[in-house]
Image (cartoon, rainbow, N blue to C red):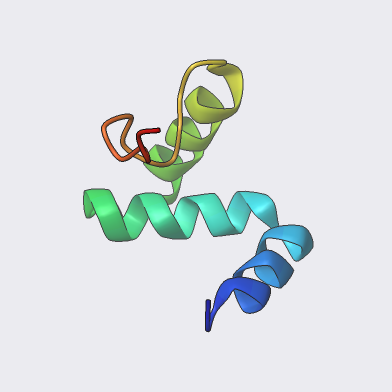
Length: 59
């Protein structure tokens, strides 16, 4: 859990920038307008997760 506290600090300070950075890395999107649209869709979607739904620890 080497980076967990650092990531939490970044998320707490600017969650929007954090999400856009992840979208940019994972989707290869660099356009600010497109990143803003992705962030808006993410925030509006109750069922959208930053992680793949298949990435779950099964009990």
